[in-house]
Image 1 (cartoon, rainbow, N blue to C red):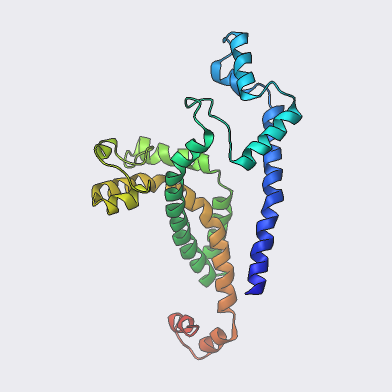
Image 2 (cartoon, one colour):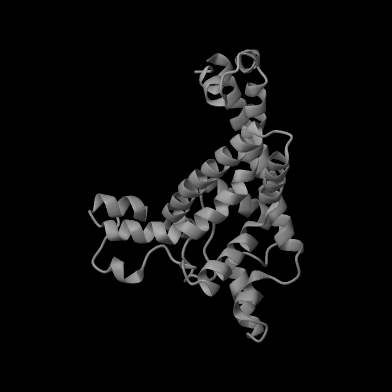
Length: 257
């Protein structure tokens, strides 16, 4: 128990310099890229004085080292600035507004990845060093290397535009939200809590494409992990002894229990 506690504390402390490094890299990249967000938002034809006023409000006219200190201190205080697009709303409010949708997608994407990863990893482990195993290992490499936005757009194009069987956007059919108030922001759960199972089914229907996209990419790592553990278990002495006695594959595996 002490070792586990130490491991958790160490890993937590290690995230601090990692996050700090990532924030620094993001800050530098955004400053060295040509152009600026103000000009990109209002366009090149906007009056120069108007652009300068917006830069002053956003703090982009300060020296880089001052901007960096303000940037880090703001994040530490939980102040992520204000959106330049959505009516100058605080960025933190925007994040919190979309957090339930993110959590919902994360849960279902994780479930899809576990189902695919366990299935492919188990088959690859049982059929190790065969063509099936080779094919599934190639799948795991390709899936893990896929670019999620590209895969999502391909699924939208195939299932939404060409086949027209799945929605390509939104969380729910718009007409269902009239007079309905979500409780947690997780539409699948809220539909059940409010007795609106039509909302639950609609939310699940809209989650198919994004969950499948996220799940396929994540499943690559689980495929390799499950395969490695399956090969390790199937090579242990009790499995070899059961195989020597002529037991079926199912009975050999059940011996582990």
